[in-house]
Length: 96
Image (tube, rainbow, N blue to C red):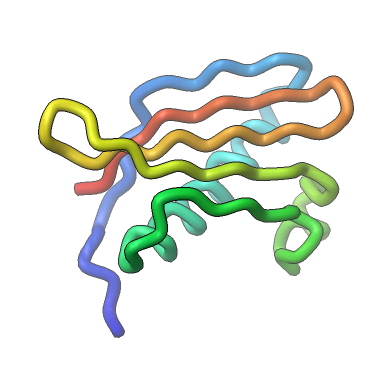
């Protein structure tokens, strides 16, 4: 199965106690997960980043990720919420 999506468009990011390096790595992980889930009928999914081999290498393990597909203005928009202790990162994105 090929992925028909070429590009993720990050529309908004709200970060609390997540540094720029960590944020960049989490956004990469979010994009990967979003593209993978977009080819399914899933509307909501929950992940532990410790389950991804690349997360440990990127020092992003231990986050909980909730991913939701929302239908806004006739298009699919994805909301991701990463959380680990006091750290939070919320991402809104779409796929082209």
